[in-house]
Length: 129
Image 1: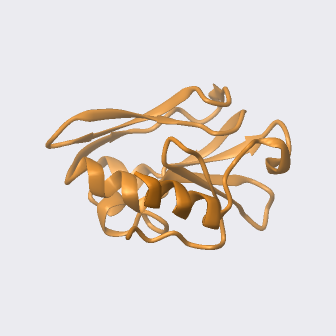
Image 2: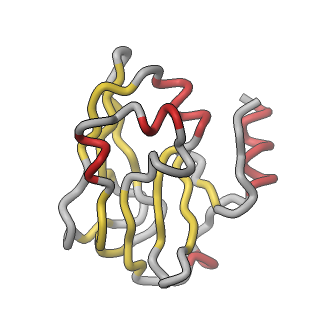
């Protein structure tokens, strides 16, 4: 069973988001997603200032198996990216919910209406696959 931290919300496309103390939203891919992809060898993060749409591709993670888009579950403006991933993409494999975060957004709307899954709902989705 994949690790599903209780302090964030999840998208069916296997991204996680959590609201930080400053009101920005941190985003990454789940433990399930990084495990399915395998060893990551490249991560393409968006540029700071880029506007992302809810459900739109916003980053790319590439493993020895395949390249995969990362989708933003919410709309907003990119305010920070994890630049360490360029030199160490394996941080996502090693710590997908910590050092492996991908970007931070200033959301255009509250998380409450974004249709995201609670940890229990996401765990249920994983269990049914």
